[in-house]
Length: 457
Ligand SMILES: [Zn+2]
Image 1 (cartoon, rainbow, N blue to C red):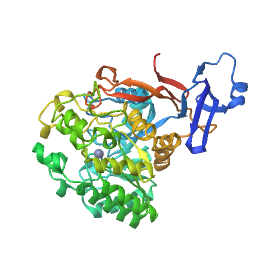
Image 2 (image 1 turned 180 degrees about the horizontal axis):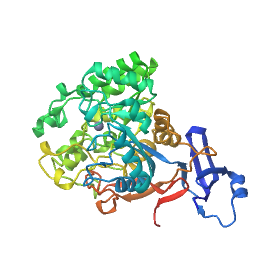
Image 3 (image 1 turned 90 degrees about the vertical axis):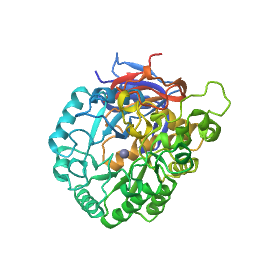
Image 4 (image 1 turned 120 degrees about the vertical axis):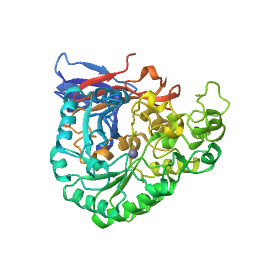
């Protein structure tokens, strides 16, 4: 049933330093053989898939996804969120705990895992909360969350402000060998900011969210990771100063890692002033686009699909995020897929919730900004979606080793396509990238040897 012979593809498995044109045999949901052995061992009548000129890599992992269940099924469900993941080429996602109720108890972890096993198109791993109710006041029962199967803890959407409490969380996490993922935001500095504090916040009359509000907590996390020895992962970094802090800390051997999301290395805060302003100023930093081209994507000023937390920052910050990804400081890419209902986003900029969907566009945007620009090799890029998150979270995933689960993604690097609201599997429509011409696409997503999605040609 879950067996397949993929023939003639370029197989890239960064975990095993494999990069070769070869056949790949999947038997009963496991990686079984490569090369001539694959053909030899393939049972008669096995389904064959010609993947010549395509990339075959370990199934991609997105460690930062909001599936919104339980409690917010109007925005997204496990079924729709994982369907979007499959379309985007992702075979595993890690769902964030800021649901309703929050994932701060073993019952909710069990509920999500059960529902995901039944309705999920891809593997779902659960992140538990650091604090009860994600309120930042009292630690969640970290040991029982671990026993219930969480792969990390985070208060994502919120940030533990009390440094002593965060220290205790790190000590527990270390004891249970869990990574702590942190949404880095100093509440006092950020206050009710909605856009990067800079030129555009002033021009547009929107309250600023200063870069220092992120950097302050990254610096705190560096200190506490060093003090406790716990693995700390700084989520969705947006500011140049954060990259520098992580770079220096990693050089000293501090167990800290950082994550970049495509919107932070494609867009800038000028986008909040509308498409015309963006294409004239910072648009030249987007692969394949320049001002004056026909059919540039168009959007108005104050478009709430450009409101996320942390916010889009300056072109200089965008460059620093790219530099951090390229030099290995930021070793993990994620989407921060954050679906919201139309009625929630269709309000004044100040009142709209933060966040955009991202599972279906992150691969293409990453290929464009990092690979097609020749900044990063393909194995290095794939590593950031596979072996790197797997290593951080101790997942038995992210590789094509013989005997591993046959989670496989097939990519067409040069496929040009336009992302549209009609073409999304997500329940929500809050992406800034509708109408964008993208380059690079997953054409088949295989989970445990089963094709859960493939591009109809
Ligand atoms: Zn967050």
